[in-house]
Length: 137
Image (cartoon, rainbow, N blue to C red; front, side, top):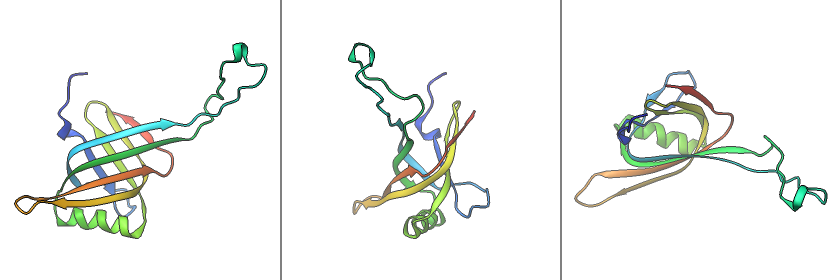
């Protein structure tokens, strides 16, 4: 896979639950992380006293974070209302030439910042709240 421009990674949300996704933000930096917990099943009979893990038993999660500029006032209002409503919404992360990750996320942090001679920026954080899907691009 050839190198991709970071600006091509998109964050979209289904704000109403109707299945229609819209891009909410011009993200300057973004990161998605996946992790899986482990279930240790080591006992006195474990070979060589090496730790043993139970396959497929740990909880999996994804965390998304980014900073940037809101696309417009409507996008800002959409994200702000999701945060203040404590709503779970289906989000999509579109990674060019890789695919799309989609599923329910909770918006866990929303920060605004700005300098007197610059634009207002935001920082956003989302945590997975259910099963995610991956569709190859």
